[in-house]
Length: 496
Image 1 (cartoon, rainbow, N blue to C red):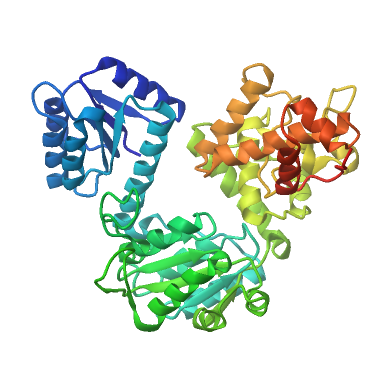
Image 2: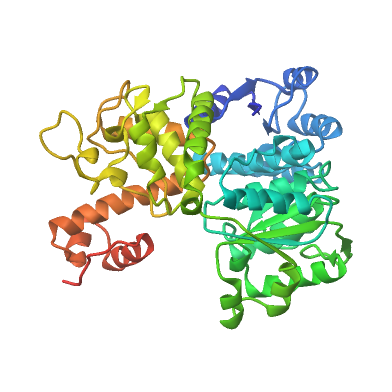
């Protein structure tokens, strides 16, 4: 990924943004004036550009104009004083992504830059096409059936519904269907409909016109437009809000849609592939999913097996993920001992391939030696497995590690880690570094859930399950702990 460019004649603002983005593991490059940045564009380009408006010499608006003329897809964030809001309007008219008003909150600034970064990477993935398609690994008979189905569908543009448990690799199959289709040279665009708030999903899918709603400062293309002539993959389609299902059905029926706030019909030449881990037939019976949309999507159904149905593929996947994780972190790949590989192959991994990948990332960061033994695995995997799970050279069992409810792994705070800073904060830094280096998304949310779960479980243990007493000790409200217990799926709590 290319660095984020910061252009500002105020050294303090450059320094603050540099430090804040460095904490997010984002590379930066700074310029004290617009002229230097324009000159640098002759040899390099940023992933996102952040620029002040008022600077000696060329202004930020001149820089914006230059950037947009050469690189129209590059997001530009303009920094402006409140007295410069007229200039901010001019910036939007010139194609700016968003503006930051001084004095700005640094966390909000980082969040805005993150959004611009996601937009930039999304545009890059549209341009790069299918060349980055990941490989699907599998030798099990159940996976061979999947490969045969992909081959049979290779010259087809038919709509496909992929079903399977969470983490089983549905997006990889969708990418393979695209890669081997007549649309392979065109964009592949993926959208998880469950990961986007309902209020934003319509705009995300269909785009919006400038002024369509508060904050819609520029016209923006939706995923249907980005996927024009290519493939649009809609993951977790079972969670799509009912009213949006009607709009999706209209697009699939006549190939036309409207941007939010728009009056001009847009034509969509897009192959739609959907996926879900839910029982859509049951959701239709429950009135949560439109029956006509279900039949429109369920033209060809492709069921992806769980990892429990293809245990013989686990060693192949483990070796692949260990090499991949080591390459991303710039370290030597770990090796599994034969007993450890047999142990992993016998586990029921509810998070499937995603959980196995997370585990390999954990091992790359946390396992002390190059050859991984069973005792080096996270305790939540080995506890209850007899002597195999007992830690070596310790007089008593350490406290249990915390497992993310969706399969992500977290460290044991008492376990040794070679080269790790002392204390649990150092181990947390290592865990976060491993997840970020592996490209995992929503790292803050995943680790935050694990942290909250560990605290609440420990407090409940000390209060013998009395949640009100636990809430007092933790310094949170009674309603808050009740909600958290429900969200995190914590058992054993009772009212005082």
